[in-house]
Amino acid sequence: MVAQITGVLLQSYKNCKRQAWLMAHQIVADQDNTYLALGRLIDEDSYKRNVKRVEMGNLIIDLVKTKRGEVLIGEVKKSSKSPEAAKLQLAYYLYFLKKNNVTSKGMLLFPKERKKIPVELSSELEKEVEQTIKEIQQIVQSEIPPSKEKNRFCNNCAYREFCWA
Image (tube, helix red, strand yellow):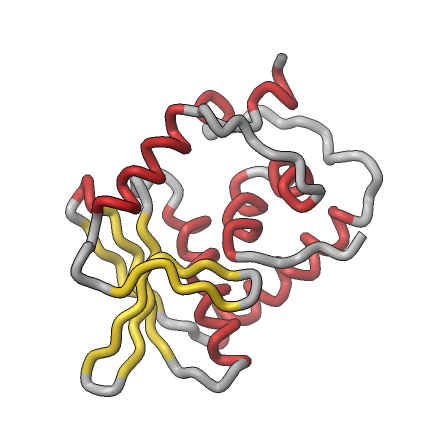
């Protein structure tokens, strides 16, 4: 299987390799999960003045705006509990845009916390994106998911039943 790489897949991989495998194999998470619903609500209700939900191929970018000829993309999150995973997701969008000759900057947005974190695609971050893509492609080739590993994200995970039921 060749995984369709998305920013959400990179974020999932950073938090849990098993979750990334399930997602890549089109196994749908519990859509009634409270935390998924809360995330959707925050995304829909925040930053209403900006261009929202731009789709490019298999990517869905939460927010795009231009300012003085510069493209700024934003990724809206319900909390800053997993900033490295969120940063990797946004870095993938910046990476994808760069590969398509669009220079852009990113901003992680945490509206409930009134927090913003700028993200620029450094060469180091670009290498991390490329390495993560390779690792995801290797994992999804397996016919079975990686072993379950308890981590701090398990309790609120929409895939929880696939591991701990």
